Image (cartoon, rainbow, N blue to C red; front, side, top):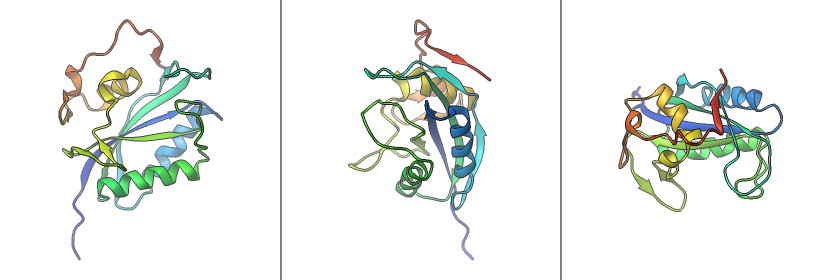
Length: 164
């Protein structure tokens, strides 16, 4: 039997519909049930104002560190399938959603194809991604961006707060 090579990956989670904390909890539970995948750590929940021009409720956001034998494309496809299973309806860009799962980082992989872009292009610009990542992986080096702990959080943006 051949051992599966494991890679560290980081997932951003967000929800602002249908009991967002419960949606994130369910998503994390399902992440751990993916083939050859274990959840290593989970950030606190953060409440943040919506990103973009659509009027909607605040989001809850978190980040999860997983160790997986899935390759990056398989993991991304699994995340999209989990969103579907959990009832995500793809509507207006930056609109409300029951669950959003973003592959933020996959090991040291740098990739930009029509299907997969890692590292996620919004990491350094979005407090709702950066703050949960800084909590669980401050020493993580994101290819092309540097160490998570040294990335500047926009402290003038008061629309985010840690809630647990």
